[in-house]
Image 1 (cartoon, helix red, strand yellow):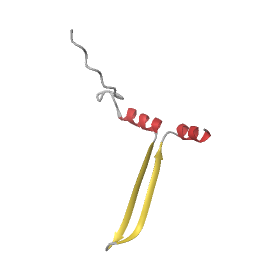
Image 2 (cartoon, rainbow, N blue to C red):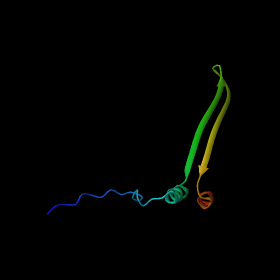
Image 3 (cartoon, rainbow, N blue to C red):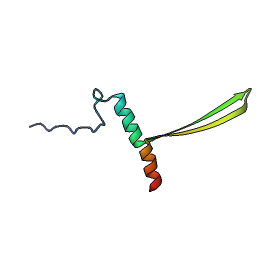
Length: 67
């Protein structure tokens, strides 16, 4: 008798997942995006931007505040 190989756990099979499933998963878990932009001329930094964005469902954010 042959033993079955252990199955890997995945969120969904690639053929079954859609963009809507991906967006739903991201909104349920939440994502923080961070970036920096420096604009300069001739080796001199003129403008520095630091960007942060939180992408999550509103009920998730409000629920975290109440705790």
